[in-house]
Amino acid sequence: MSITALEKAFHTVQPDIHEEAAKIAALIFPKTEFQLLCRNIENESLSMTFKGRHFSENFRLRFFPKRKTLVLSGYYKEGMAHLTYTPSDKYNWRDDRGFKISSPGCIGEKFEFMANEFYPFLEEFFLG
Image 1 (cartoon, rainbow, N blue to C red):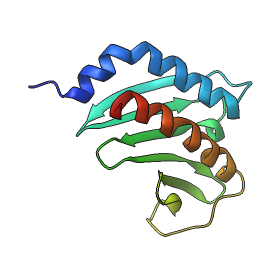
Image 2 (cartoon, one colour):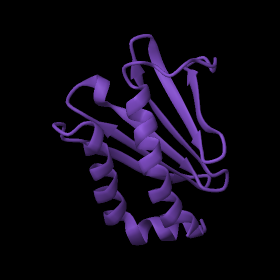
Image 3 (cartoon, rainbow, N blue to C red):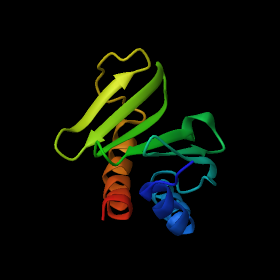
């Protein structure tokens, strides 16, 4: 099994990523202690799952460096919502069935803010 450049970069900066990811999450959920459940690199992508004290504070981040795309997923009152963020297209919201939705009121602004914080950080680490 070969180690990709992304895997090498991830293992080199792993503590920095964990610390910075926690800081960004704390900007939106300041009183929540997050538990980073997994950090996977599969198919040249990074995946992090955050678990808060309440299920409404749980979310998943996926970063696809080659496609220059960040996806944040979390629960809202109607189920699961996925925010796809790209620098050129900005925000694209979809529900769990893949249908386009408007920004969910309870998590929309929070996720859009985090996307604006996470993307430049991850882009700097993985795309230089």
